Image 1 (cartoon, one colour):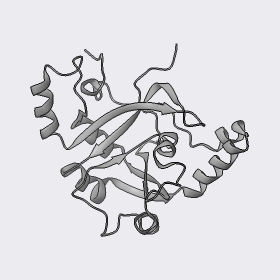
Image 2: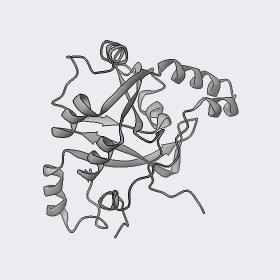
Image 3: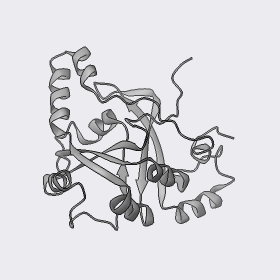
Length: 200
């Protein structure tokens, strides 16, 4: 059996799931220190959370892109993560998922969360055939995320730099060993049906 094209892979335990974000130090460092986002964090914007560490590395350039120098691992309650997925809409129209474009536009307006499936990345940040979940939160979902779902925030910037240095040195096996373990997430039956192309 090959790797499924669409599947959530994430570090998780019985009660929490880990996602990643990257911010400028003035936001990221206080968040890691206090376990919550500081007052300067914008609740009125959509915030994107990413279970995949390597996709986050692709997005933030190993923590070297401007305003993304602090890489965070955010632990949140699985029930919150699944609430967001249950109330999410695909960020793009897909004829295999939506009845028509007006139905998709209506769902997009009404949903406090949206999903993109972007190519997963290898250690060189090249795209792979299977997809990685990106989950965008807005409105009620952002408020729940910031105020109720988060159980811990860790600064994993040193890990990003360590893995990147190993990749640059050609020590790919050791770099792979340092990566967070991200097995398939045990999504309840039916949770992702409205988010999977070719699901119906």
